[in-house]
Amino acid sequence: MGRWEPNTRERLAKAALDLYGERGFEQTTVAEIAKSAGLTERTFFRHYADKREVLFAGAVELEQLFAGAVADAPPSTAPIDAVALGLDAVCAVFEERREFARKRHAVISANAELRERELIKLASLATALTETLRGRGVPEPAASLTAETGVAVFKVAFERWIIADETRPLVQLARDSLKELRAVAMGNGRSGPCRAAGISEPSR
Image (cartoon, rainbow, N blue to C red):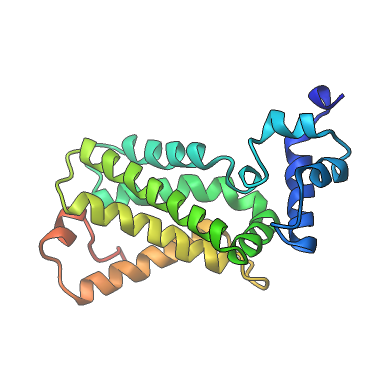
């Protein structure tokens, strides 16, 4: 039955997050998740390798989307502006999933193993962006600095976005965070890696 049920993956994810929030991640079993979703354990394992994967599914696709948008930026685009295009692309994907993101973040924050997994995911994203920027001819250390900057901007914007009373779109928060970073960079001068990364004063 589960194979043909529409939205099976989404139902399992919702059931898992609800249970993680109620009982805790460690205390929740795959059998309980499947039962809550009205599905079988076998169906669960068709969609997720284990109960952690509910929280981290899509990480590879996120990397590909972010790096792809950076790679596809016009050749004349400054590195930091190419990363900004990547931020726009990934933020658009998250926009309709704010409540899911809030619940997911709460679950991960409460578990040391999951927090470590999240950091690994972000490090992998930074590596992918660095390689993409190198492919665009950005030298080191500017490529690594710009990639890490993009990931940091996304992380800061995301954590603002999931605050309970926050209503602004994620893309706006990411752009605002990047603008603030540019202002700081301008205050400290524009030499070396900052110049190579294309960090300059935002247009007024």
